[in-house]
Image (cartoon, rainbow, N blue to C red):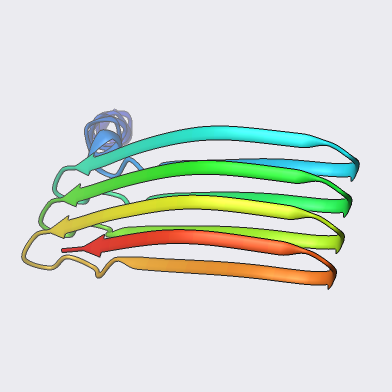
Length: 147
């Protein structure tokens, strides 16, 4: 009987703690592959984690043109906020790739991150731009703001 009460108590505690440890994850990709294809995408991701043990915000945005004569265009806005005693911080990865022959990949990205709390983990932003092959163009404009 005591064991049942203890288990019920731990289960209740876990249910109350779960929202405080919530984690936000988004993975967004835009791809034009093959011959003569076009892919255009506008993305807005807003993530907010709040609580004593606020989980991290994780966002991955990628733009790819691969093959022959493809175009991939993407506009991305990533806003991440984490607030709590032990806030988990934020991580954003933004990638732009043109690979193959005569491809174009254009990306405009804005990443805004804020982590607040006495024991807050720092924010991480990773931005990549790659052009590989013959006659490719990978253009990228990025603004990263971290507080």
